[in-house]
Length: 170
Length: 163
Image (cartoon, rainbow over all chains, first blue to last red; front, side):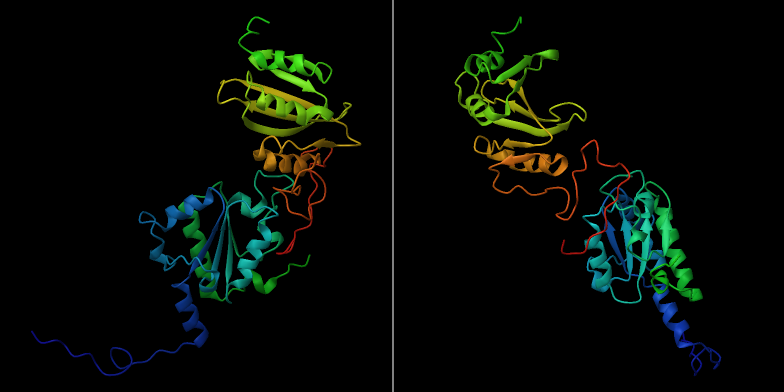
């Protein structure tokens, strides 16, 4: 059986496509988000579920979890952050390479949750620019997938990252 | 007390340190003695070494804040004897203006972190403790958060990486 020869030229039929470098890079980034899970509480278990076979985060190109911040571009803060932990989290964020995104997963990371006390940071947006908040206590894996899709949408549309609007001035 | 022969801890304590034992009770089967803080190390060493008692395992040490009472604080120690399989609770009152008590580390080395916790949370100072610094909160934290007069809504400034 003869293999049909592909036509010459960049595209089938000899056509061409126009794009911009930004759009090309965004397209590449969109399907290669490397998350870094900063899991400190029960949210971390849901993260494991989201990255496992059943929910399969690799469908969205974000399955390569890097446990070095230098190789990651999405900081997924999953759990309660207390004042003693906060500087560690900031240092990890600073070690990540640009461009980078931050997801506050669950009630604790978003607002302190029900830990309204002397030791718990009342939301990581007190010290980090947060791009996406996931509600829930803990959120289910669909919520985590939704946050990744939201970041993909930001990449696609070129929406400014929270870091570009940081610090927030009221 | 019906079971006094089976529960020698309080009896031996009163025999040995009559004046230093302020009060005792065995409510709900828990032998409890309130003792004077000046004698705490001697009493603990006695409880550990007395052949009838042999409290070799110090299970817990914690502080209590009775805000409004005088003296204000209390240090509670729970002891267990692996040999004799019995327990006792030793309580000591500590005044607010001088919240100092002798460390029982010479008796049970394992009390180290418990005393640091009581210091961190209540500001009770353990004299002769080898390393009395905060254990749960960070060094630059101001105040003692489990004191009843620590403001519930108080938030402290976020710290840098080296504090």
